[in-house]
Amino acid sequence: MVQAQIPEDVHADYANEGVRTALKALQETPDYEHLAAFLTSLREGYLVIDVTGTSPKRGPRVRTIRSTKGQLVLPLFTSMDELRAAVPANQRDQLKGAVMIAKEALALIGSDRFVAAEFDKSSSSLVILRKYISLAAGDDPITAETLESMR
Image 1 (cartoon, rainbow, N blue to C red):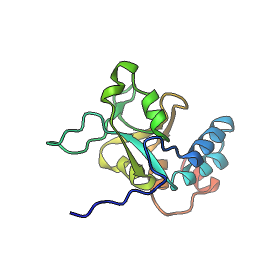
Image 2: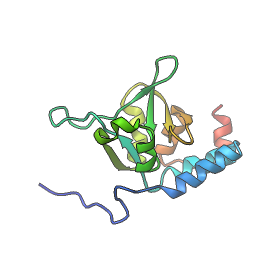
Image 3: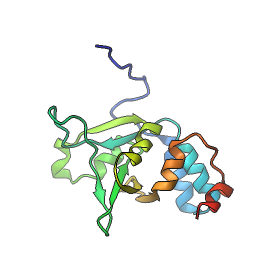
Image 4: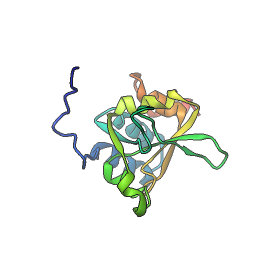
């Protein structure tokens, strides 16, 4: 069996600072320019997903959340600390997170009937619609004009 090579910058305390910075800028100035910058930043580095409840028999399983209307939402985190903060303290000993290549984590949006992804639920709590996450998971250029035309 071939073992995967884990990059040196990926560890239990990994944080995607580029995405965090772009997320903060988008929340401070919510416009198409900042949304384009945020979505573009998602293509770099890694994101963290919650795989708590995964068992050896069933294999890896992404934990999901539901919208107020009962629709599936994909929770994504910019760091393990953000994932830890999203879980009640009495459940943290059971927490399992996986650090994934960002584009692969974004591609999970197509694995089920997800309507959106929510980033950093405990601190920033930004919900982005599926069509924008799918765009970020691809290779097409992301510009403010492109996003405005997708309204």
